[in-house]
Amino acid sequence: MTGKLRIALDAMGGDRGPEEMVAGAVLAARQDEISVTLLGDEVRIRAAMAAFDLPSEVAGRLEVVATTQVVAMDESPFEAIRRKKDSSIMRAFALHKEGKVDAVVSAGNSGATMAAGLKYLGRLENISRPGIANSFPTMKGPVVMMDVGANVDCRPRHLFEFGVMAVAFSRVLFGIERPRVGLLNIGEEGGKGNILVRNTHQLFQQSSLNYIGNIEGQQTFQGDIDVIVCDGFVGNVCLKLSEGLAEVVVSMLGDEIRKRFLAKVGYLLARDAFAAFRRRVDYAEYGGAPLLGLQGTGVVCHGRSSDVAIKNAIGVAAEMVRHRVNDHIMNLLAADDFLAKKAEAEAEAGGPSAAVRAGVGE
Image (tube, rainbow, N blue to C red):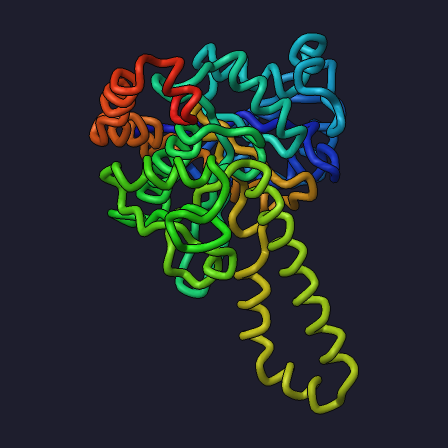
């Protein structure tokens, strides 16, 4: 895709208020090919923009759309889409549906963001459950995990689709031609895990994806896997655990350095290495997590996102649009002939209802 990319930003999302969102939008708008539409409290947004001495060309890439409602972080997604149609999240996806923006970024209520995406954009054809993918660092490069919170109750087909979507994302964003796919489990053996994981393992074995089998938790950060598949419950626990661990390691390291004179000297000598490590484990460097499976592009961010994280999330959204991630997802599904295999399995099992009882249907 060529031309200027138009990204809608929910300026009322996140814990730090519109001021941080505006700062992130300003950083993103300094790139020639990106314009940002900020939605929310117009007075606060414009006041935050006024704090920057923006060149006219950057200011021209920022637009403000006033909204009158805000979706709280603890608000029910279903209540939000029913009662708050003029909220920044809902209006952002409405603009996307109307073709006025190419993608939506929000650091607000992730459930409401997904619900709004489904309401206004709908699902990709043959995708039964959109999900949230997340990228994080390993010893050898980034890994994509999906799902990390959108779907806590899944069937094998859903997990298989997560794998397909995450593979497409990994190919496009990280340039990995044949991403290695692993299914997160309590053991590597095929018979390990609950019925969901065992049946999903069989689906992946029958596919044309580069599936290496079940993987255990300690393999997550080793860098030998490019895509990790799990349900949203497990994925969200892994995500929050890894974020917390990274923060604790950095904090503990700082405490130990401050306790000893020689450690302080060593830190001064290796300051650049410590700074690089800190950047490597900082979630802000990876921006946001894409909502994959929608007929459009959405990215959710951590509620604590800084201006740098917001800028990077806008960059992720732009890359997804530019490289047509959804087209790659559809092509992968078609190439794998998964739906034909599913239909054959249902016929052999005595119809769709039998397949559903066996745990492989919709």
